[in-house]
Image (cartoon, rainbow, N blue to C red):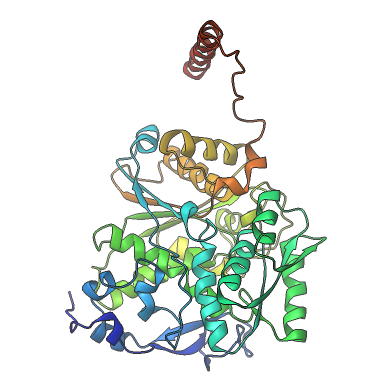
Amino acid sequence: MTVATQTRPSEIFTSACTKLVSKEGGTEYPLKAIHICEETFAPLEVAYDYDLIRRHVTRETIQAGPNSIWRYRAFLPVEGNDLIDVGTGMTPLVKSRRLARRLGLKNLYIKNDAVNMPTLSFKDRVVSVALTRARELGFTTVSCASTGNLANSTAAIAAHAGLDCCVFIPSDLEAGKILGTLIYNPTVMAVKGNYDQVNRLCCEVGNTYGWGFVNINLRPYYSEGSKTLGFEVAEQLGWQLPDHVVAPLASGSLYTKIYKGFQEFVKVGLVPDKAVRFSGAQAEGCSPIAAAFKEGRDFVAPVKPNTIAKSIAIGNPADGVYALELARKTNGHIESVTDAEIIEGMKLLAETEGIFTETAGGTTIAVLKKLVEAGKIDPEETTVAYITGNGLKTQEAVQGYIGEPLLIDPKLDSFERALERSRTLERLEWQQVLV
């Protein structure tokens, strides 16, 4: 293990990010608001001086930092000290017992970003980084194309930072996500189309108005925020990497950045190297990456989304090819599940671990279950399932699929009759399960 010089967090170098690099061919660019290589049209990624990080960062300096994603500031693409810190990150890593027993696993953990701050999804991580960088680059108006969670985060954190905000969403989003954006008083554009159509419109708006779009021209910085989900798990596991990761797939960025986070910790000597298997989860109604994986293709064919899992319903995933490569090179898997299985996944996590997740989390749990049943997860493996959003945002998905309150009179005998009916129903349900 490399031992770095002890350094107080306030004395750490200003920045270790050095440039943007094309993911295809390695063409270099300055740290500006650009996201596509002019030569190959591949995504750009932030590069860092890892020797500099290794000399200054230790486990102790990280633990002495704030209880937020900014404890990992040295690994994030910001250059100044004016950080937007709203308490994002350091969400619970829950050691599963009841769900693990139900699935037959011995070492299952749930990374619960359903309680992330301030808007109850992992998007708070990427937006905190993107808007900090946007402010450094001089943007005063920020925006995004969103399936809901990103709009919530962008509007909330922009309000905190005093930035003007205009967000774009498909017009058929869940009511909870629309309300959860409007409350922060941004301008909200509800577009009559799916996410991919919204994204195309936003590219035009960004080019015309010069705004900072967190998942377009600011995307190289925005996507780096997802690495903190890898950093936190490694730290919370006692500075160790897990054996297996199961995470939802939308654009593919979250999935690949968790891997990058693990690799960066290995590179600077914070954790021992270890092979980690990466498995991805998609809804059958929008599963272009899963389809490519199953068919052995090296390309991802766009699809038109049709699923209740709207937060991961991206038919033309920008990082789909890289997610595909990651699953294959780590001996992982990419699976898809039906909407009915997604609902069952939401219910299963809630009734075993007390975590109410949105449809993306239901997809992850349903795929986790499917992989276990297919023998693709070793019961002895330390497995981490990533839950990325809160079920309060997608209540419509489970309406009609869960129980109803028992209406009683304010009398003991009324209560007792209702209790007996309830227990009788439970016994019948268990008999059906056993059959």
